[in-house]
Amino acid sequence: MKLHRESKGTIVVATLIFAVLSFLAVYFLELWALVVIIPLLIIYALVFWFFRVPNRDIEDHTENVIAPVDGKVVMIKEVDEDEFIKGKAIQVSIFMSPLNVHICRYPVSGKVVYKKYHPGKYLVAWHEKSSTENERTTVAVESLTNHQVVFRQIAGYVARRIVFSCNEGDSAKAGHEFGFIKFGSRMDVFLPLDTEIICKIGDKTKGGVDIIARMKT
Image (cartoon, rainbow, N blue to C red):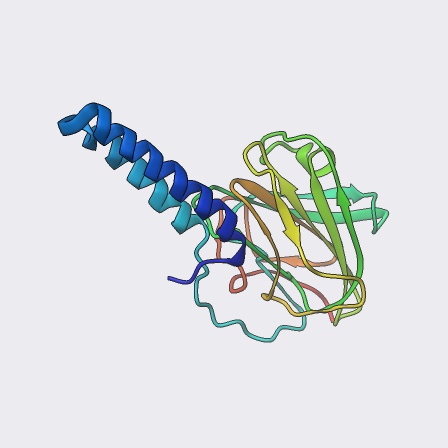
């Protein structure tokens, strides 16, 4: 199984903790050590599972909006996007549990025209206000269909590290990685009002593969 490059530090710490606690369990509990070691082993395995990088066939897209992350669609509504669009937009929010793949992908192809990091709170990721009050990043892409698409990585109550590697002027390719969020978190996508929304609340999404909307050309 291939692991994401963001796993290195976390896995080193997890390995040290697992080794120390297992040693102490064997030393002090002897025959009862497995009562402690087995749950520790499960947690240790989940750390590796969290940082997995699945093999996915990423296709080329022009008008399609691709799910930027693995997770569950928790919100579809018309909102005011005040940071970049500065007007009405359709917000599609996808919540990621700690068991989901946490690679963040471009939802559309085009050119990166804006990026900004915002420090903030750590409300639970499904909280509606987390989009504007939590630690987050905002990226905007001028799509191949000449639309402005904004997407936002949002840290949750557990997630305390957001990584995004894109820069203004970069070429964006739908489905390809631009960042990563550690542990539970959320991704918001803001689309033009005339966008055809294909997904619905409750849908499970596969990042880089599933089509969640389609923009007019």
